[in-house]
Image (cartoon, rainbow, N blue to C red; front, side):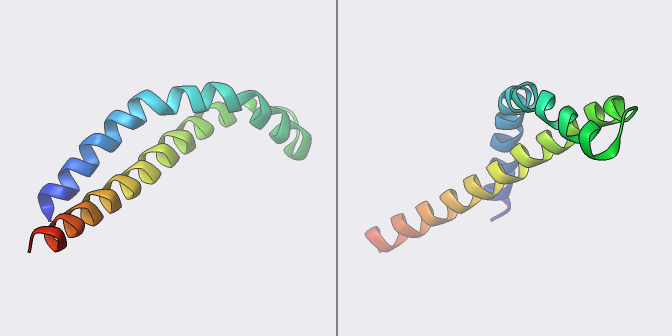
Length: 83
């Protein structure tokens, strides 16, 4: 089971490396407009840093959960097929 978790973490890191920048670049403009509209001027620079962390965390944890679930379900499917 630890090997499955290790593989899921490694693949999630790879997906985060490839997926977080496009998510960030496609959404940062909207997020900054939203923050300025609701919280006022002067928080744009903080928003850039926080939103980058949020994007990375979202991509990492969603991909890790998906990959881990797929690996476990794939293993169960193989076990029931051959045993």
